[in-house]
Length: 186
Image 1 (spheres, rainbow, N blue to C red):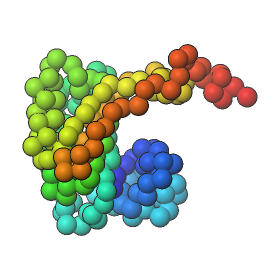
Image 2: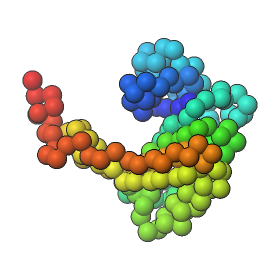
Image 3: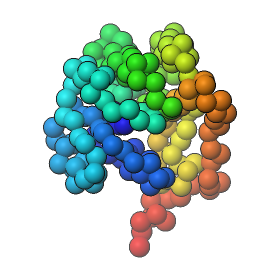
Image 4: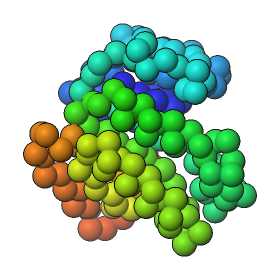
């Protein structure tokens, strides 16, 4: 199940790895047509996540999503939880706690790790731990995984404790950066 699905980029990655995204939620109506075109077998729910009843979310193996980043981004005002978009992170954690999928993935911007958000970030991790998950997080840069762009993102991954999964993040897949010209120059 996908939250903050946008046009479905994260979903596409999961599908390429053999997962089936059965249900996706997004608030922005301009994403709908692209999402449906690229994911025709996924039920797309155009709705505010705060208005979704957890009973309408299908049971599934995992939750994936990247809550809005503007509250944490160094390119924004960095209001954190003082911004209504920042509070959507808590709603996502609440849904994880209620639905108890086997795993979850949360992706967000590097700004979450700023000192001003240290207590908030640790609170998020503690809430996920208290919900019954072994939680790991790491700052990854897409350029280290054969993407021709420096794009640092925080990934938080959790597996239900009863599954006894020992998750580790993948090692970088390239030593030398790939340039945009090398990637698409032909």
